[in-house]
Length: 116
Length: 113
Image (cartoon, rainbow over all chains, first blue to last red; front, side, top):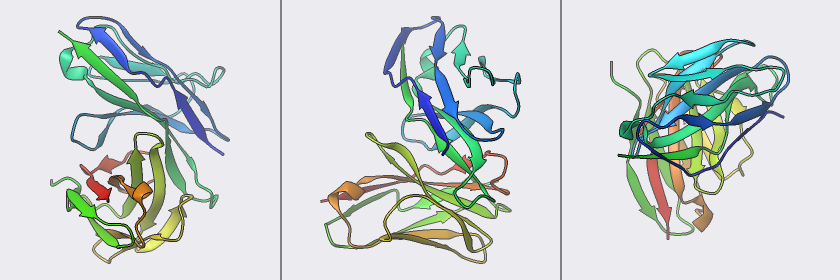
């Protein structure tokens, strides 16, 4: 079945530091890949996505590139801010157990804390 | 446009009781998915409904059930609550659930004592 593995953290950085959160996946076919973010007390929201190999998703200074050869989708940001403190989830969209419908499979999440 | 609304936000129940959680999706969205979020297991998929039909189901016992109404609002029910059911239950809606873009509510925090 489909699975997503991401570094579990927690990750603690100083403001303006470089961020990398690793994510690798296992899936059949050609899944779409996503990063979702969950701020304290809120639900998840989509941060960025990529739908095919070599696509780069980007949003709010975050980037991730769909690497089919390494089955990876690592999240990066060049200079983090205190407001980036949140839990980050890597996810893939692929066919569910029924074979005909799609569902999201999430990694376990990485808690990022950015200190001023 | 209003977002995904989940009610109630917090619930405290005791073992053996049952509970019903509600989710109102974004207007026009016909797909509603439910997830259980715990510190140990992360986000686990419960089930997905589209146009009142369950299309996908995760690996949860039959105590967990759901339904969707004609206006796309959804409920999930957990019967015979166990301590391990304590979690944040998240609902997400999407137009068709085929592109992976889902919009999440803030969740219902269930505590089972």
